[in-house]
Length: 493
Ligand code: NDP
Image 1: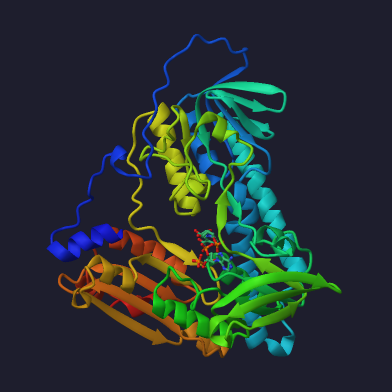
Image 2 (image 1 turned 90 degrees about the horizontal axis):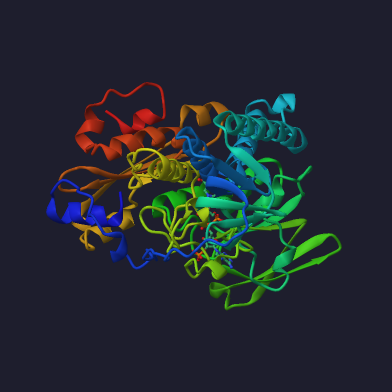
């Protein structure tokens, strides 16, 4: 639920209704320029109805759907098919996390057997799955009739795309080039690794400094620590996952510290240097009178956000408008200000960087351009997870967002929080608490947000997203039969 929606709902106690905005009303949404038709004197190139630049989740989804509608589609990719999600993101990360989870169970329950997960072995299994997915994507694109070109695409002019020595004349173009890690902007910042590099490591270092407090920094710190790496986490803010609910951030920090991760809050990194095969990461902390401190480790990794992959596309020459961070501005139909040029996914301004969001946008756009206009997916209740240990699963508003949406009236928002040790953790002899927090509209008891910390949280939250969309209330949760014994039952009955 967006803050605006909750605000309307809490203030009026009327059923939530989506406010309609014209594309031109929003300042971030560019007005589409209609370019007058000139006599076409360009050299003939390969013709296509739709050229998709970038074969990540969004690009592949759009290309396949457009081809299914009968369009002649060319998909251009300079790297592996599948993009960040398959090759350097969700898939390898989650598999490594599974492996690390088994290690933790084995090392606590079966310590007498010496059960241990090994990075070298895990990465072989991850790579095998990534290769299987790459092949499967290619096969499905081929079956759909999409032509795949390997190379780097650059716009010559609107509708003219150069790949190597070839020119493609495209009716419509989609930029789905994704995003890549932001470099650490301090002296020596170029020395540190990014999350992309981790998936290429054949072995893990003995110790690492992880810089950042968002999704990737937390996931990497948790995964690497479970593979036996000594982790120092340098966080600029005063809590982890600043966009998440306060209670969940605090509970997660406690759990990670209990698992041996050293977290340094309010730590502003000022310099990185490398000597004798180790990294010195210097940082200052306000509460330490700004004195410079140093952490030394065998590796350093920065995960401080991601920027749109648009360099080299020649977008400035085309006049495509971009935001301060370089991401492409689009209207509600994913059109840039330049006619026929569209953008979706992580390279699009203001978008949430999540695979299912890009896939839904790609399919909807392909339907609109080449088929019948379909229903645009609901982006108000986007479930999200952080795959650390314990995992976080979230959908809807945080307590703070709900209060802001109620114009600061705290009595309009009610919360319930449960802390318990799951059977799984009791069996493993681990004292880690699970935390379930629900945020309600105090007047009509509608559930505004669910924030869970437990290994099962991501799976539970996926289903709850549907319930929140349908307007689930506290009374529904109370009168639904719990399934025993599960962790999810703590939400019901
Ligand atoms: P995030 O935006 O999640 O977090 C980046 C963090 O780094 C922020 O807390 C930011 O703080 C901090 N930061 C920024 N600059 C600096 C700096 N110079 N020094 C220290 N800290 C700094 O980015 P991520 O890179 O972790 O992830 C990118 C996106 O990828 C996410 O937004 C998410 O959408 C997606 N993702 C999703 C995953 C999932 O669904 N499980 C997994 C991984 C990624 P500040 O706010 O102060 O700028």
